[in-house]
Length: 248
Length: 294
Image (cartoon, rainbow over all chains, first blue to last red; front, top):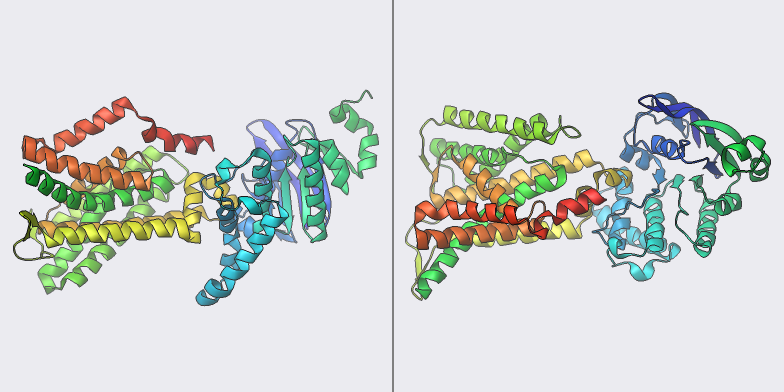
């Protein structure tokens, strides 16, 4: 699904990401962990196309997407959520999802009337399902700015899903959540995988990472220092030194 | 006295309606691109000159002239967008504004080159005397301007709040970066909004010259000043604010002209703007703040 080959990004002299190799298979949940400033968010931004690569290449479903602008990558099937929430506060919950479906309509380019008659009903149905999935159906006419924190997080996930991504990039989705909310998030992530969505998860909250990830890659100073199943990572001495804070 | 006051209010509303269309065009461009387009007014002037040229050479009817004004303004607007705003999209706002000033000068030169006289007559929307009604004199063309402006503003409101394109525009205004990550192409929104704003400007320009009955190259500066002033009175970047600002501007001009004399008309409007900027009320800056916080 996703292949990073020698991906690098330099900010001036700082090597935020330095020669990263990472593969995410179809239907897999891969977690990317590491201490603060280790390059996790930069990696997500590179995949989403927020800033250009300094070196390396990114392949998505076999195609080099390194040069595509962000909205084209979304149309290709890569959606993301943000570490700090970025909803459209002045649009309602429903409108936030509707506007994110935009990409699909453009891609389909069906006849005008078909789009208005068939397309509208289908779009409504899909948004309704997303609202149900995110437990936001009762808030659909609320302005996004007026939602509680947890609801905004759920809406952001729903907005990413509105574009029907094949690959979902989750940038610290559990930040600021309590244990119960993390449990619900875990259920959502697992049920997304069952629907065939591939997920790359950036997360500090080990409770979530260990519960959902098939495979974990650990970054430190922009480089991958370990990769493996959750149990292997927990046992890895280098990881414990760099990240888990264990006495090695 | 009361009748005079009422008469001034009606006249002010008609003037304010034409300012509202200019201010809405300005605000659309400013809201989406975060750039001040000084050659917005001059582009409107070019549209009106295209219509005047058709009038002089072919004696075309008013509908054709209106279409020519819109087409001319959109073409001039496209020229401005390509030369001033597309190259500076992610760059300097000042560079774009200065470039738009340069095009303003170009447009004025072009206009005087094609039609060199200082003033040209333009066919009126309505020939003949105003209608007398309860002691008030009502100009049918002014009422038509009021009606067209109201309809256009309502359509625009519907477009921005009821259609997916409108939502994409509002999402881009709020946060262009997040919008592109939601699959919206900001570049496409910019171009479409520029075209829309130019078309509205073309309609405004046609209505203005067809009620004034004349065209001069100064129309460009006049339209930029009125639009900018109304937009600033209403708080930068809010469409409703721009409409309110334009209506307020129309009233101030009409009443100060009556009470203080025509030479005071513009000065009072500028004084009010100065006072508002100095007092810096929260509604004038709220929008800009919400933008930077996102």
